[in-house]
Image (cartoon, rainbow, N blue to C red; front, side):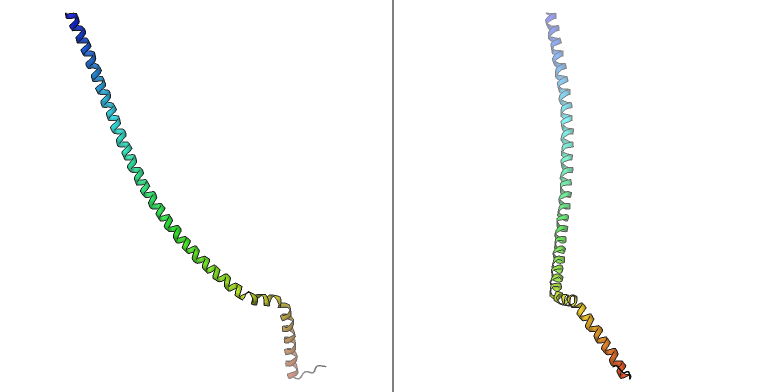
Length: 127
């Protein structure tokens, strides 16, 4: 009878040892899970903060783009006004460029005539 009790006692000790080992493994796994959960939640919070910062930067950049587009529009309006003004005065510029030689010749003739008239008034005689 002592042999059976000794075997049962050994079986009980083995079972208790297995239970203690399983409890220790469960505690270790639970601690690892808790650490993983804490790290993950912290990482999620950091990423959400980063998302908020990035969204703020995006909003700032979109506002800056909008302002710059307004400036470009204003500059384009100014450019179009200048181009329109240049188109309206272009015929006068063409007149000057096209008739330059004729005008230069006439001006030289007029200067020559004025010089002769001045000389006549001062008493010179021309044949």
